Image (cartoon, rainbow, N blue to C red; front, side, top):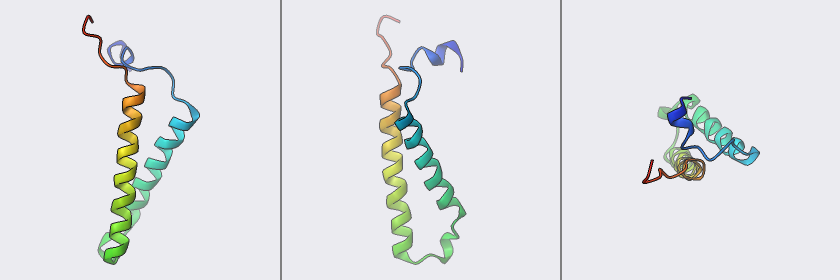
Amino acid sequence: MTDEQSRFLSGPLTDLQFARIDYARRDLEYARAEDLAQLQADGLILIIERLRTRLSDVLSLVDEIVKPESPHA
């Protein structure tokens, strides 16, 4: 990470933030491992909903850990 990147981070990640990232990675890995062509519509819907939830959570996490840029920087 460069100094430019680090100045926007709010600090080290908490255990909860690491867990949220880990859950997102696991769900993505699961979706990639599935043979989507073999799933029924309800299975696909469940995977999509899980990934939508994780994407929303990860974007919220980014908002938590990235400091807004100062207008005087």
